[in-house]
Image 1 (cartoon, rainbow, N blue to C red):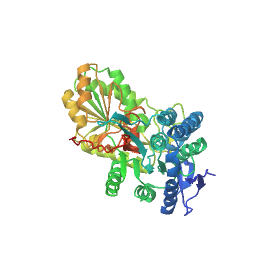
Image 2 (tube, helix red, strand yellow):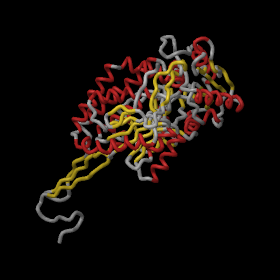
Image 3 (cartoon, one colour):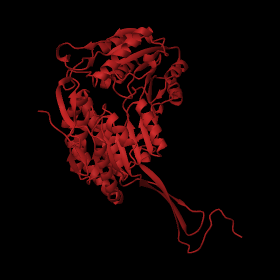
Image 4 (cartoon, one colour):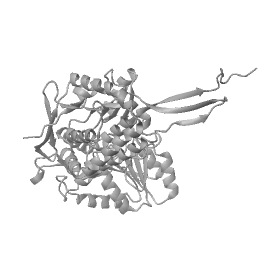
Length: 497
């Protein structure tokens, strides 16, 4: 019998009021049910938001270093359970085990980092223009936040939202993806074990249509942090904007790797393999476009195809597997449809392009690593996010042409260039329209101590993760305090007689 999991509302593990449930399946073997979770409705969300509202005052007034101690304990618990959690991520999402463990490591890193912010949360103290008066700015929490997360990083992305929200003094209602709810439940369970008080973190399972929009627009919710598709993010941003809610949306990407004629081709191919086929291409930062200088195009393509041929499909828990499944049947059909679109557009299919259902792959959602060459920049496969193991190789005349192609899409999350020319790299760093730029590295691999987010249709509102301009700017609001201890009326900016 499949293990059953619950919502967490006001410190209690409870079922949905309707009694309805959802199954989480292993995408590498759909006969395996990873777990069963509640299919929550509006009344469940109402209860969760009320619990978060009731808990806010006590959590807000807890000293931030004490909140940090709880997050530190959570970091230790996640670290101690890393192997189990990583295997769960792989079973539920499909990524290979080293990546599943890396997913968990990001959560550990974020927990430690934000625990430390409990002794910072810095503002400013500045001189006043008047005597016997001081001036400062401080960060204060916003209130109840809705956290809505996707399936591709079922532990890391929730951690990117939960820990900065909590250290800032907010309470939360967290709705994970209905495709990876078990990993999210396990993470929340460790937060409870670490000592998070009842009502501070509430977990509500359900589909995006049934629960996501209702939670985001709930009158008791003061802010929304969303990661998911551009279409959903833009819709939520419009609705929340009309309701005067703070909202941050991390959305899609169509990320390029530029390979210049002076690049180390062996290094660039390694980066293209990892960027294009890591996580089966199911990252918002995946390198789905390779923009290659015409002088090395044919040679690069030959090496890239030969290297990609060696990638092995399979269950991510097996050490022999390089590329796991896509998440579900809907995504499988979407990716296969884009492969057909690429063929019809006139791109040359040089590797893969098929679903694999042979042997141990027959019960999963497996697609071969797929490469298109002779792709024109205006083709749909070169402009639209596919979110699967499909890479387009595009020819460029020079650096200016390559940067123009890279910037010529609706997205601007991550970009990369391989070159040994310092001037070339400096020009790319300056001119690539992306929130993250890599030099001689692929488009994936962001670290948690700097802000994460993109431009154009890749991101709206504040950024994620740490550093100046990161998630703390989303989860706090500024308060400026002037204290006059002169004992007399002083008028700033007013000339004295």
